[in-house]
Image (tube, rainbow, N blue to C red; front, top):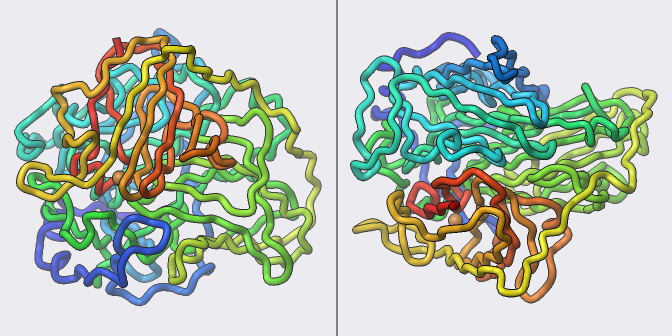
Length: 518
Ligand SMILES: [Cu+2]
């Protein structure tokens, strides 16, 4: 990370002939297992497993307020990063880095973050998985205009929510179970290009339940943000947005309307990185931060069977008991908290994290190199945490949400129950404290994300939940022509929230709905 680009320089890169001319043609069609099209980079791809795995720095509080809340300040700004060796990539970064700084927080201890917008475009910050009051949740039209006063209200179909000039303070109660959350941009119509260019980071909530478990910790606990990107000839991120200035016209070129897939896999912002590990257990907090790509993650060694994943947590924190997987299918927005036991492998073993859904460059993710024997007191207990089971009572309210391709005005787009996103009309008015049964129905893959409170999967198709659906979820991977039924309960915080598809191209092309809790 280094020098900032000027606003002019940034807009030049985004809007000028450079980015447009460098946009490569779309690839060979949708990759099996993902709904989307591959964008092929216009630069030679680096050798995998050469770059060390970066770990984002932990955000440091600047103080404590009268209520005991920890105060943070984060500036969103344009910066440059060397992501591919030898090339400079302009990014939009929280504090100028990608991923942004990691928030380390405690259950019950509120956090107040003052976000300052030094970018040339409006922003909205959402804490994904946060149990957050409506005015702090990042409503897609609660824009924070650029601090230099150049912001306008162009775009967003002329609609605005609560506008802020330059800065906004978000208060997060953290009144929720320990879990891996993440924060990212959520501006109406432009979430896809904003996240693609770097606006995403981790927010980890911890609590006493987790503290009491003998799980791997400290340097043996790693947050891993996995995402795919394509690069233009000048090293910039290649994104086929219709409006490269991210101002007025939402969506992407027709070839990519099912979703933008890149041919470079980044983990914590580095291409196919390598990480040296002790022969010991590690806890990995897997996050799929991709716009549209799904992964089937496995751990392979040169000889022998796959190394198993031991899942200990889901989107909403610890499971009741661990679940072993050979592979983990993870859709955009989902998190899997896993333990991997490298102690069973000889020192010198190279363990490659692969993606079984791609036969090309995105078929590899990163590598671990077991470099030394080491003492390890950690273990994975058979009982991890208490999980309340959400059992819908007889006569519980039932709702169906159909996620399908459709028109948005005169444009192609994506709809929920036949409608494109309407901030002013609620698709569901929900009573706080009641358990409801929701059915998500799809045409193609749609990872469905609900704000405010997590849910539990009751049924997938004609079967019960799959072994990937365990625990509390806030994002569920609904496959083509599938029906997933969940039980959901919004406990408190009356107000206006959204549910949407977390394929960010679908979301920007209107696959979002307003829900209201009363
Ligand atoms: Cu979708």
